Image 1 (cartoon, protein in one colour):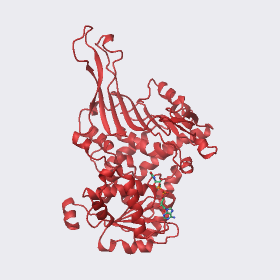
Image 2 (cartoon, rainbow, N blue to C red):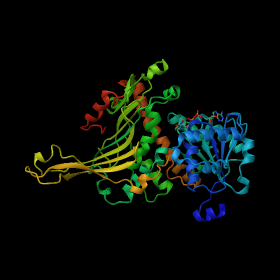
Image 3 (spheres, rainbow, N blue to C red):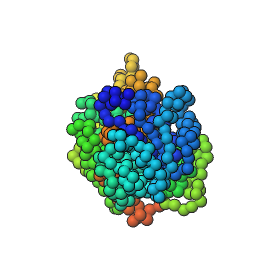
Image 4 (cartoon, protein in one colour):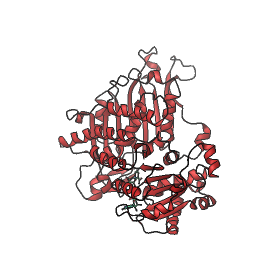
Amino acid sequence: MRDSFMQEHGTNRPSDLIIFGGTGDLAMRMLFPSLYFLDSDGHLADDVRIIGAARSDLDRDGFLKTVHERLKSHIAADYYDEAQWQRFAKRIDYCPVDAVEGTGFDALAKAVRLDEGGELVCYFSTAPRFYGDICTHLEANGLAGKNTRVVLEKPIGHDLESCRAVNDAVGAVFTEDRIYRIDHYLGKETVQNLLALRFANSLFEPLWNANGIEQVQITISETVGVEGRWSYYNDSGALRDMLQNHMLQLLCLVAMEPPSTLDADAVRDEKLKVLRSLRPITKQENTLKSVAGQYTEGAVGGTAVPGYLDEAQQESRTETFVALRADIDNWRWRGVPFYLRTGKRLPYRYSEIFIQFKGVPHSIFPEESNLTLDSNKLVIRLQPEENIKLCVMNKVPGLGRDGMKLQEVSLDLSMTKEARTRRRRIAYERLLLDVLNANSTLFVRRDETEAAWAWVDGISKGWRDLDLKPKPYSAGTWGPAASVALTERYGHSWHD
Ligand code: NAD
């Protein structure tokens, strides 16, 4: 079956996938459910095996019991099938390891089938401080040859210097083409649809520049607080946890030049050019172009919630909200603001890319037609639902005594009816499948992460140099008032 599968798909399938941190939250909530669905949809070759590797002293049965319980609690009952689970479970094994001491790696070496010509994917779902040690032990145990690929979870460091240290440690063992840095936003169906919209249609490209676009906004809004991970979050904050990676990756896909092909390096070269064209936010401009906020007690969805500082009874300057204006210094985007905003304990949960086109240069319609002639907008929703809408002006149907009336209507450009009724895929499914197929187009290259950190470090340095405390905002509101002022300063307002 493996041979026929490989012939059919024309790829080398890995024999073994080791998930370091296999007992952790990410593995249980995202990775095992994704693999279960990939398996049930027939995307895993018969002899792909999955080995959980973590510090817990479990045997295979104990590990399987946990995976089974967590899987059932994380996927909708409609999609769970006992027979499918039994088939999937046969692939799973467990090996206790200690990434620091190196114990258990010899057992891993015996379990995998590299010497049978198989391939090995090692998914690092542990804290990044272990990545270097894991690589060293993989190498020492003969598991870091040319048939091994490694997947790195975010965060890759907390600033440029620590990012380089992680990249150096992994790069000392693995060449860059075998390192897959995950940004799960790139696995979302709508994000890939953005590529299709831009590069499979000729309609938008003539307008996709400073002549046609007035402003771009990217928002990732969460209603949750820090969910019991106060000290983890407190070491990062909104700028490092969300903006440096997910939001800048989305900005790159909106702003990049058309790549010559969909090959990994062609796409990543174009994203890198965008990151390198981001105008540094200087200390002088820092308070005009960026806002850091921290939530205080309030109410979200009608429920009272404590403030960020109350949750840990500790002082902290970590921001739980950030809004900023980014400028891209190149011909295409000169003068177009890219507003980025993300925060916790905001009124509702959504992620969106909002693109506002320039208005018509002159209106032929009388004022009574419509109070404001709204400019066209492209609204790309990533969550909670995934869709793409194009807002255009249209005539109100019918005969009116007062002449022609106008209204804004939105055209749904997203998915076919059939796609809408299908199960919504977990973003990790796409990415796991791609790494199994050795396709790195949707993964982040070293130079991208470092360019992103270099830009973000300039902003946090500005906050430190100016001795700025994050501005308070009540939980359940759209962040500090200064965030509203930020866009209004340039004649725009947030698309809430
Ligand atoms: P977690 O704390 O739930 O799990 C950590 C895992 O690492 C456990 O399996 C633990 O046994 C293992 N581990 C700890 N010390 C070890 C050691 N010395 N040797 C071997 N294994 C060891 O963490 P998580 O939430 O699953 O996050 C894992 C990684 O994924 C982190 O880098 C995190 O930043 C990233 N991440 C997590 C999420 C999420 O939703 N949880 C989202 C994005 C990124």
